[in-house]
Image (cartoon, rainbow, N blue to C red; front, side, top):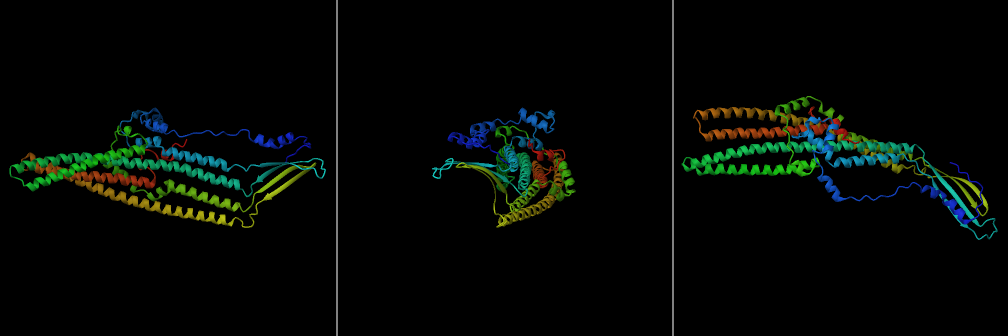
Length: 481
């Protein structure tokens, strides 16, 4: 842009210095001051301790996500309620959102144009040549001009970076849901095992008492009594292990929810879907094309595509840098009475190497991102088929154990009738009940394996399989506002 200066003779050093420093003075207006913001660790601790699942803010969040207010207060926490809780309270989503806002800021700065620079000089000669004036002053402005559409390429790269960071929020939300689901089913399995072991402990104790009476009457050997006591001790140890495991799983759930442990221990978990409902969910999803669903839904694939797009834009930028930027430098000089106007033009000599090394590096980076995307896509396809096969296997196992448990129940009822008729003694009846209980234990384990297989398939597809549950759109949005 042209600058026109009136023909002014500078009569004093003060006036000339003021004229040279005027642009610097004007440019200092509107500066942003630094404001210190130290981290208060005690306040962070207090913030964590004040997180409450029964707070009004969390209720408003649930209502915003179409959770019906008639369910307040929540007395039984299912997977959906726990997922909402994790999305609201867990700090990892705050980190992902902050990174997205950072990417948005980078997107704004990427479109900034290069600023002109101003320079000035002042000097005084000894007037040896009897010049009109012993003073010399100069003022020049450098105006950079970008070429080859570099600014738009930077904006394009920043947009892909921002979109990748936004997708990372949804990926973080889904990871939280996966962690919560895993711990939730582990806790339900743990509770079922505690119930089974408590029953088994009662049966084992009854068997020990019966053998003890028989041993006292000389009707049972010491070996039989010792063996029954040994099995009783094993059952007690397994029950204690499960009780300790419950504490660890509850702590793990509190960590996944981002809540203090004291509140999580007060939560009552809702029962998992019935075996028949789980098998219907499995059967329905086994009939779908899991590979296509996985390729369409996976967030990591979309993030990989954004990374590839960033590599593409980086290559375009390096190619554009073959064409040098231009700097126009108009200047005015007052030198010993002479007034000189000049217009300079400068540029880098990129034509010497044509930026070929940076272009080669960017091109190789694009090849790396392409190879990583292909590898990730192949891995997703393999995971989808593996998860489907695992679900099919656990479905068959659950069906078999369900059938065996029904047969064992029939056998226990038959033994109960025989006991009522006096044809068998109490020890035989208790043994029959124990056999039924062991069959129930196998059914509990098979049911847990089924839930794990469904959760694994959900994680592979990154889509909830239960249509009654939380919608994937809620997870993908993850409240980025």
